[in-house]
Length: 220
Image (cartoon, rainbow, N blue to C red; front, top):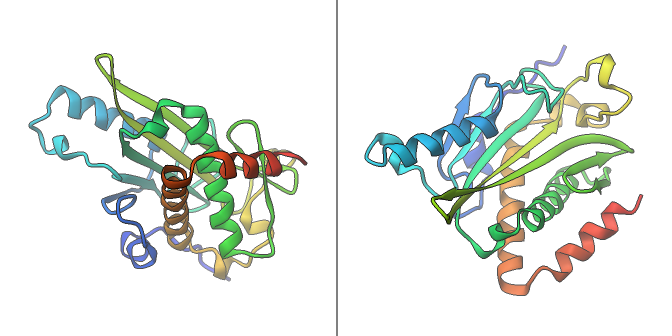
């Protein structure tokens, strides 16, 4: 019997090569939504900037070992539940563009770790494996007054055994990859690595290549 691996801050940091994303990490045992949790943190930070949460930094990342959101289908240690706080960037003025960028980055991460898999995308935020939804991306711009302050980006990815009632429309990495290779810390770290790489490419090269890949992966 193989015991499911649990996400670990130490293991994530051991596999990170980012300069910003994931350099400050909090891991929750469970939450209704890492995305909503990050939104609450930002609201509290804005209301009380001198509190300890006033130090909410660019790249701050929250992960949960379990999530009970209606948006997702995995339970404790059955998925990646991750939200990132990202400081203002020209990219964030267009949440659709950022969503597409993160979707492409997730494809890169999963295919790098598991070369036997090929991922596709479905407009605008679905990650597709074998015709079924493997995960989703959520992006919210956050404004303070009338000014764009930051962006909260969340990634949810099925990695464990699915409930039978969702098997017709959901997919999981566990259906195709051995449990011994499904380390949520390694997967989370590589997703962060690839998002930062793709953001870097966008900043220095532009969006045309990324958008072309998004369109190609959307043709199923």
